Image 1 (tube, rainbow, N blue to C red):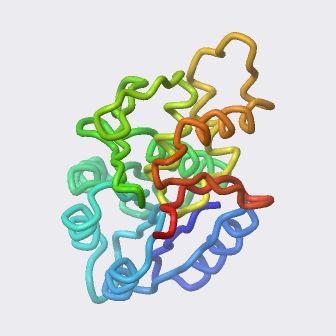
Image 2: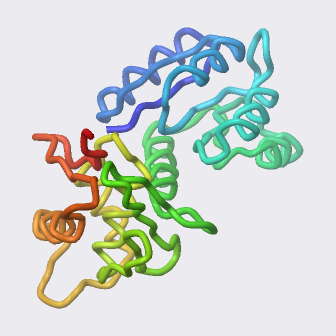
Length: 233
């Protein structure tokens, strides 16, 4: 389940989007202007933003630039009536991950949103993903290759183990749903003797063994998915 922020000053459209996205399984919050959106983004963690450009108080383009300065990796889908080529270019150059014009089809919005969320959960390009466990052991993952290290000791990881662990590290302290893992696995070759639809628990068990004594634990959140946590001291 993703936590979404809808920034839209049209009350009817805002309420409709909130209702549709809630029915689609998302946790949805909303803001009526750019200033309220910035205030909420400073205090609450969101997985993605759906942003109108024609906002009161602070314009949507200014909000988008503000997001890119402070929350560079946060996915933003622009949803606006501004349908000119120059408007699209301005929105994308300001940092939008996707751009959809009004009027729109809800099925297309949901598909674009899901694709954007899927991309955001894959390992980022450049640098390493890392987290410090309670036992002062540092877990590091290469963002592009199925490689990992506990401190300076290399970990033996299959590509699916690496994908799953990357999702968990990138969402430390947050639940990663089964559907999020399977969405990433769909683009990867099937490993011998395993099927993506029924092998998730096997991979979680393997990773738990490999993370023993690291100060990190993978917790099963019943009915929702899995969460990587730092063990209490």
